[in-house]
Image (cartoon, rainbow, N blue to C red; front, side):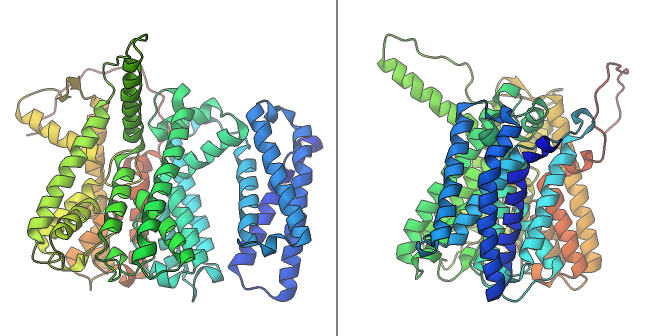
Length: 580
């Protein structure tokens, strides 16, 4: 038994080190306390270094693969380097704050150890939806307490406001009750950024990837659950899909960071460190469709209002993030297919690969619907707001801002115009776009583009007297149609209920402002007409719950309360019901 417990040594030291680091960064420290803390870092590093070999002596089976050996040796060497640097004071003389290196070291160690844990729960009796929702809830609570640390803000923050901000970040919404740039310190903004990243790609996706990276595999139960989360039907390809999601996320965010940094370092009065953080923050926030910005009034800020290259970069990031990972992976497969065929045509000794259908029906439906919404939205906004919110822009600027404002309501949440000043017809159209939202398995919310498209197709087919929905020589499954109807119905019911409750708790607010706020919260958009910070305590809690349900999905939220059905072979006779 004692031998079995030895393998938890690195986990214990890593956990204590992270708690100490948060205490160090989050609170103001005296000289004596700082000396104790700095000595503790040395002890924790030494503890990790000594217990890693003991861990694998106690449980050698985790080092079956050469890749795991290499990772462990590299990390162990890194910890030894930090220990020596701390001992001789070399780490303090470097260009990077030594606490950043310590945070990286302890975080990697903690993630690695948590990834290696095996929880003994009976999968067949656990609803995956409940686990998914619990992961978001725990992340939100952790973020709430981190944001309440004294050094996270300049003047402190109430629990309700911290909970609201944490929920908005994890649910990648973007609604704020306090200004992100002026109210939170760099430490607090960094916490928000981490919450956005984990909430955007999903905490379970994140932890499962590192479990595979550090441990080299995953259980069958975890693969089944991950298959549901990543929309991958083939168990054998779940890990591959997971790696593609993480790789593509990093690739797009790094590219976005470079483009933003190259633009603002020459066009804005901002120093180098601030420019780096600004670029990282907005790249991650845009790709995750979070809508958070360190700028007051987002990109309607006077210093960035006419920065069209920056607007184009941000729009590209949140449009890509809103397409959905299955669509992105399918597009990657298509590009790979074309590239390989081009190479094989050059090499006449090999036959060209032929695949009947590279693009899936889901990809075609999502891409076509997204393009139609973008084009229609741009034209509508351009025409309706030409002499209003677009009046200060000229030529190409008008068109680009119209395009931005047509794309951002579909869960991005950034704004380049004064949302409060847009005309009522435009407001109604923006609410429609918010309700539709982004695409399935993306970083965005709403009822999703495919749900909206299926509803339209179903109406057209019923009007034509057809008994099935067909598209591109394929028949849409009954399950997809049922789910689309359920999503639409639940969204209307929940939005209606929340609007009713806010009418009671916020009697001084305009009806249009409340309705706009609720649609924005449920669809995890983040646009507001300026009433978020003025909501009562009850109103903030209601919007917080609305953001949470909107992010995890109304149907997923409800299904988490029911026991997972195993299905039955008995089938009753069917009977029609009068509808109209």
